[in-house]
Length: 237
Image (tube, rainbow, N blue to C red; front, top):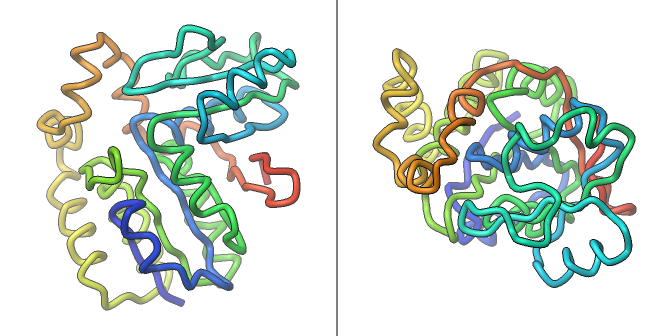
């Protein structure tokens, strides 16, 4: 079994042979962390969509909607893109429509994968165990920022890849070597390593840095969110 990392959705077409693979979409700051938090707090399902117009339409139909663009909550939405928005009191047993700048775009791009799952530091160990039990190749798709590389998603890719390599996976790709090298450098003080990133600066500029520590903390949830191609919803395995 092999593990691979795709640094950006713009590169995903070059990894388009995903038959029989698990594709793990990750957007650490903050979409995939938020999806894990919402489902862990009892949301019945997350409905990921790419379009703001479609999100508005769902809102008129009475759905709860989480919507964010360029780190800011959209004015019509019930929630933004913070994991702290989706409390159990608000989302228990509810279907939540969700659209973000990068994460839901990546999900839509990979929606035809055999198995599409959601990865974050918050569920990294249960996710690694899930992948191993499936005995399938794994591709980590980093959501990045507007189709560009970013550090935090690549760090997650390196961290998950290292866990899978430790379980017997293999990889000879340059992308994996880079991602794991970054992860090893960051591990002693991941918060300090992350402080130099573009996205941290965006969050700070908009006074949204409160979720950073949570987004970088491993194993705050024990769920594996899976995308269902038939229902177009993400639910807990």
